[in-house]
Image (cartoon, rainbow, N blue to C red; front, top):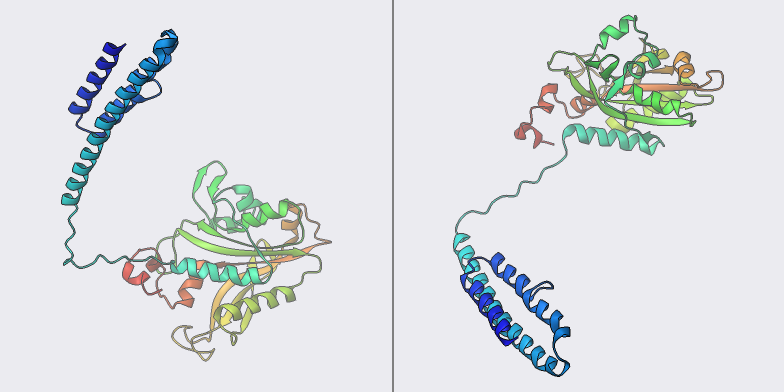
Length: 339
């Protein structure tokens, strides 16, 4: 047994001496002192040793373990010290160099505008609902009272993926998904990215953002629509803001209107910002068309509602007096730092 222990010790010391990395020293610890190591195997074989010899053999094993552990710990300490010294030499800090500036990012103007709009409507009791950017033709057009042969569909022609699968042109499809669940009343806004085959210019982009709202309940009238949007305009642009509704046509609402707000730059007197009219077009709105309610299994004889939609980029352009939509997407740090 003594010869076997001397052999284990000699082999372990040789491996420690030849080790050139901490990983190899750890391997020696596992192979010799670990649960399945050589010394542990000797201890497990103690049952084969005569009872009177076991204390003596146990003492020899412990002495061998202690000798190996001492040499091993010294080698690890020495190697760690050498490694630390090399690291310190390689990571010398020149305290005379100027400090590195830590540039903190901040929210994009689109995000700032979106969060403000969401805050206003959440304060009115609305829920913020997100929907899929990849939609079916049914939810994007058919369920919104825009049949396949209707001219309005050409105006919003979008990017088709396959068959009737497309990138949505408006977030109104999210409203249909919510209406189909049948949980009434509904008070929601649906913000999100939309896609249209528009040419890129100062006011258009093939990818932009919309925020659309929907209210469905009993006894909802156009007066509720006007009061809601008037309050929204005051919260967004200031207490002195006035609103004006102009008749318009949307397939999914009847009656429909475009809403203008009094110019917050000149107070409605007329300036370059509002092109001398004193008013700025801000969104489209109207009472939900009965066909849209029926297709979502809502009885138009019992329920009515209103809907509205606005371009998020337009809100940001107006609020921050930006004259070119492309600036929002060019990622020019000099521009973004202004917000």
